[in-house]
Image 1: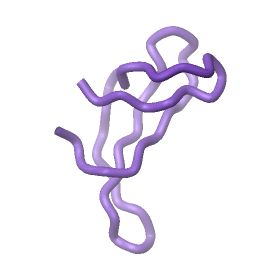
Image 2 (image 1 turned 30 degrees about the horizontal axis):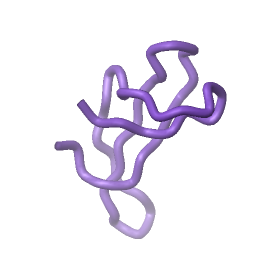
Image 3 (image 1 turned 90 degrees about the vertical axis):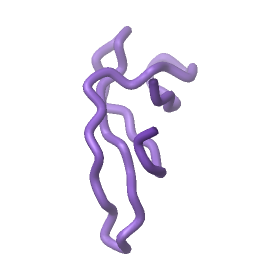
Image 4 (image 1 turned 60 degrees about the horizontal axis):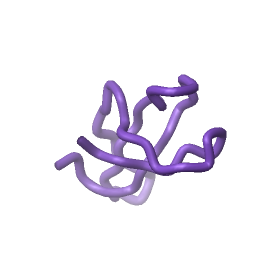
Length: 48
């Protein structure tokens, strides 16, 4: 699982439903949802 920092919960959480995206400059990123609060969370880097 990929972890990212949830701003609302203020802790690191596993991303649920992760999807790979690219930033404007071409860097890879991962988007998903926080399993606790349902907030969108984001992490720069490839999906592993």
